[in-house]
Amino acid sequence: MTDSNTNTDVASYLQSSAQKAWQIDGISDDLPLRTIERVGIIGAGTMGGGISMNFASVGLPVTIVETKQEALDRGLATIRKNYQRSADRGRFPQEEVDICMGCYAPALDLGALADCDLIIEAVFEDMDIKKSVFKQLDQIAKPGAILATNTSALDIDEIASITSRPQDVIGLHFFSPANVMRLLEIVRAEKTADDVVATSVNLARQIGKIATLVGVCPGFVGNRILFARQYQANALVYEGVMPWDVDAAFNAFGFKMGPFQMADLAGLDIGWKKGAKTTNPIRDALCELDRRGQKTGAGYYDYDESRKNIPSDVTAKIIREITGAGDSTLSSDAIIDRCVIPMINEALAILEENKAQRPSDIDVVWINGYGWPLDKGGVLYYADTIGAEKVLSVMTELAASDNSIKVSPLLRELAASGGRFVDIDTGGLKV
Image 1 (cartoon, rainbow, N blue to C red):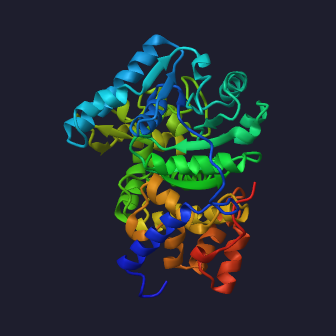
Image 2: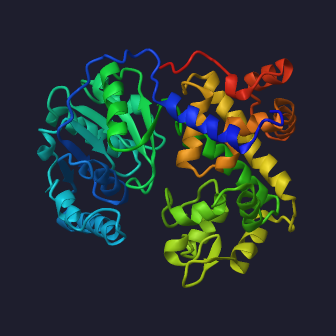
Image 3: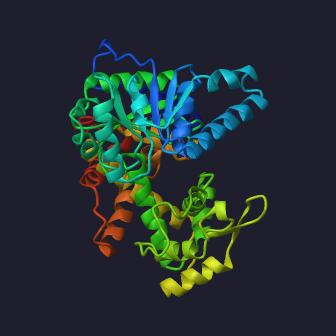
């Protein structure tokens, strides 16, 4: 980019990107939409409850299903508490709390979803569990009902294959907390019908989300790029760089939370159970000590009563024992290059595989779902500010020492041609 890359340019790009994200290539604007008059939610936990609020808040009736009365009661109590908190803060009149809660029809049997026009599954992130749910929905849901999964990374084509109506299956990946976060990844599977896509996009606008259409691949767009970042952040720790030094670099770059701050907030025990030996022994060791993040008062960091994070001697000792590495220091710029440039490379791989419609959609995902600093415009906008040659140089060096890293051919082309990342056109989303 040139000196014209000012705050005004960034704001203009972000506005244009958000507008483009609504444009679905290959689907006519006058395609008839499916009618959505009642929504079903499977799961009243953190995700299911949060997702349900989006619909109740705009007056859509919601049937919410849990397996046990205790879980259902707890979920509804949390939903009411969230609405009450918003009313107490003056975001809407107090009477709206009861109006929103009046939209709910709680149930303990999936059969209660028979009259729903859209059913969103928000159960545990396990393929066998999700396939079991969709097999039951195939027998229960009325003809033409949209069957959606909130999976954040699993293969939706595999989920759809368990049904006799894969054309009705789509991914609606809400971000936590789902009643607050504006991003919605709409994941089009191989056999998803055009009107299911168009209806989902229209519904996203109705509930106040910013939608991006993406394709099926591990992690879709947002988490796939996040995985690339986390891989490098973990690698730095195994080389002796402390988690708080990595996070400090990200904070200085403009992120409110770095990789390890985010991990502590989400919970280190996601996908972990006692005694497990995963690919991350440091995480395993912390969890075994019941250091599972903010919720237990300790994770990578120690936390005081106000949940302020404090670098931990316990964590530092575990890291030294497991890695055998001496303490290492890197500049903030070097840490950002190491972690962020592979994100750019992964974004290019997504475009090469036609799993996103356009570069700006990827930036919309990271701005609205992952806290990417607004002044840096997004992953690919930022890539243009540092240039393809630098990105290629860093990726080539990383690939030389790690066989799992593949340099994007598209990156090599850009470095040779001098083209811009945000102008890449690989033909849009293909399934």
